[in-house]
Image (tube, rainbow, N blue to C red; front, top):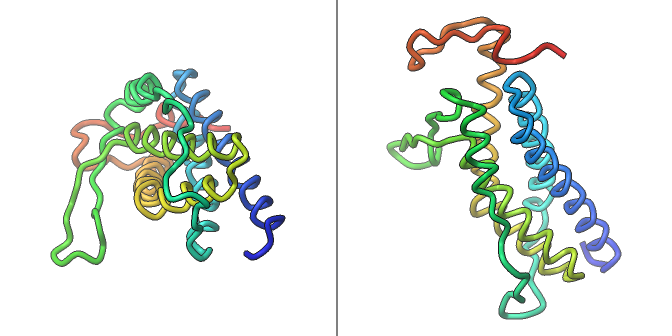
Length: 190
């Protein structure tokens, strides 16, 4: 991307997706409805990862200043994290391969609620720069945090959410969840 107009369009597009993600996550957390939570989170995480992939495909953005301008306090997302954890219950925790290129592979335990809250904090931080008119800083922050954290967190959460949907649709018992079976009560039909 070379022109400031193209950068502005990209930043606006990423900002729109970040806003959509944050609104949806807040609404899912408030809803208390497990049946719609998983499909909605699956959709929103997928869409945000597409925005992140657009950032990852760009050359590195370089902020105008050597030091990040203060955007004010980061949002407190703990209530959303707790609400999602309660909503997802035993489906919140999952195991993933941390880095597929490490030898030997390292398995780590994660929580969808923690990943969604961390992603929300990262994209909200970039959104604060965007709202303040600092396009390059917003793009740099979104790109850097995508590559360093929320891209991996989002990919892991997406895989876990997709697995919940797959098990629910295929009506299979999941090893590690004891007697828990996926049935029509996990995900509501549209």
